[in-house]
Length: 306
Image (cartoon, rainbow, N blue to C red; front, side):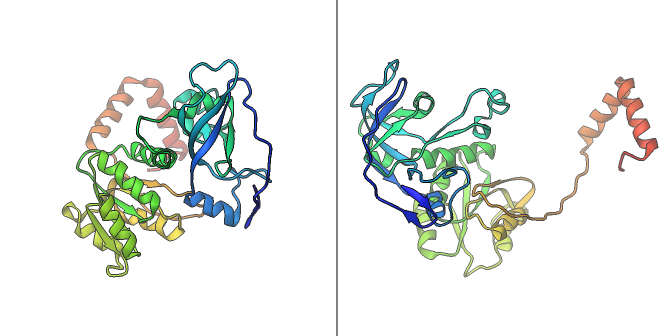
């Protein structure tokens, strides 16, 4: 049980009982990710909002009990349990972005012999294992799903060059997701051993920032026309690497700040309408008297910046 930063205790507790629509899972594999390390050291405002709290959130096991009214799963079934489920009815869920759910239900407790999985998470995020898959491999489903989500949000096009800042465990999962999408992957890091693991995971090139401290120049040298990367994924979670990601990407590129961080960064950019949008704007203005009149009034009042 987690009692506070640096305070993790082994306690005896009764085996839970599955309620209606719930399952009880005997844990066979529980993993530890960077979020667990950070939460152990400094707490977590969402995952560990209330203490004491069960701990650990990446798990796989065997269903030992099935609650009433549940017919889709059975006792003895090998499953992976993902630790969250959206509410299905908030502003974001109704617009097809459940990852932004205002009422996300979370589940901790992988570091235990048994875990009771709430009905909503049972319905949304319990998945039977394919035949022959190990429990330890299956428990990677939660972090790998996060990597796949990040790559989906990047709107990747095959052949694009993606610069990945960081070479840790999550970075290697991101490499697998990026390569599956057809990307050329450049990994930036400072640890030679981790960079070799990035190559083993499928990275096309690695940039050792100890040997090449100017990461911006190093990326530009490796991209078409030295324009920079088509996309950047920041997988370190530091203010300086957030700022670096802006400098690595080409004009019109995309950035994914994968690791959550509370900080402020400043960037500068410029915008100029392309000819197609200029023509479209002119046609819209000419076809809508109301829009044209409102625009003219805004310009005359000085509320429209040129």
